[in-house]
Length: 262
Image 1 (cartoon, rainbow, N blue to C red):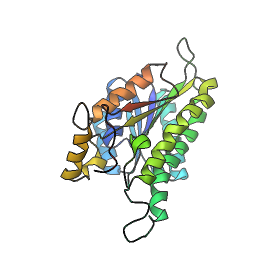
Image 2 (tube, helix red, strand yellow):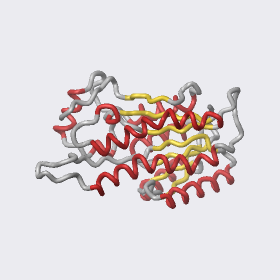
Image 3 (cartoon, rainbow, N blue to C red):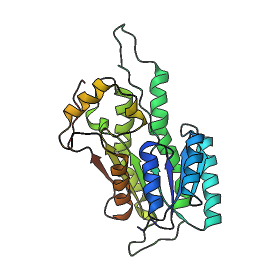
């Protein structure tokens, strides 16, 4: 599928992996609709990228907020004439917490809800609200493709560490829904792919202490470093352009398997 002159919706698009993805797709001629809560960053990015970028303040845990962003994006598409080509669900949070702590207190349900509402519910809600517009796009290419859904899981979906019960559950669910989503959308010529990165330089990893970062580096195979956002963005580009990538999960981790403890 061609990237140029297509519109891509990217949640979490004002920072980290989402921002790197937006910049890379934009560099290849795409129009990017950035959904994020960070208005200051979003405005700066639109100024940087110019007329082929649009920012919408969006809380992906809120259905109405997503609806407003989709409405704004589709109105923009009518102005530009650049049909929607895909959705990248990059918004995500991590909130560590043992299921039961040293004081024999269970993790607050509000903490679990916060992680699940953004990482899982927000992913599904954005996808379901974007799909009615994707299914009506004119099919393109010899395979009659309409677009692609690219979701973001994590290596924690497969080998989550202590304190990552809620996070691993949310990302494991995203990984699990990849194939059934691809099957649901096959009749429309829409693909579904999930990328599961390990430790990447992002706002989330910036909060880690030096000891934690060193422990993670020790667990890496090759290369022994955190992934770079640009490497994630390159994989997103491959997912868009390679029509045979469908219903699968791509581990982007340099062979790393998380240890049980840091």
